Length: 287
Image 1 (cartoon, helix red, strand yellow):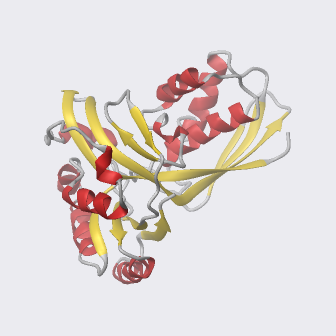
Image 2: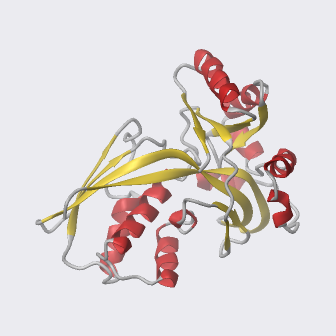
């Protein structure tokens, strides 16, 4: 097999509500997720040995465990359940997206690999089985199987795809904090009412912005209590000219700002980089 390159786009949560807490480890959430034109790149080819050669490169390779990453986990699961037989790979994952940032980088790596193996007919998996396998790898992996559409999650078992993209101008800032998703969910006490989501909220870009300005991320207050500089960063982003709103993505630590135009987002990036030169700060469009 020749070498192939796979783009693994990151996600951002435009809002996130906790509607029910079953126990300390299980929550029912409602969230609107979209994808940005920011991505890791997987380079993959077959090898003739009896094991995979998996390497991580790039700005955010540090801290990823060789035996406990989503790529290794995916291949192990596929072989254990006999979807993948007698085939091994050379894989390099160029990590452009920070992990522990609420951007779904690891989940995107796993889902992109699953889609690639199916597309190339290396594995034979039907759609319902694909979702089942993705769920076994990680909570966000089923969500990441489709990256071209905006996504609404109702309950953890329900994913609704929406065929609209308003091309938001987005600033993403990572304050060099690896958030513990488990810790933040366990400490969170905020529960929102399970109000009915209506597609009427997204008929136009303006109506969606208006809706999102009134929304929030229920995990944000907990993340700020544990990591106070997240709160400081959110305030700075929110006061930038042209910013509609700012909030954390997922359980953090990445902070996002949605801007009225690209020039405003770029200007905000310049000011924030001047104040925090060590933070990862990028401007992108949603896809």
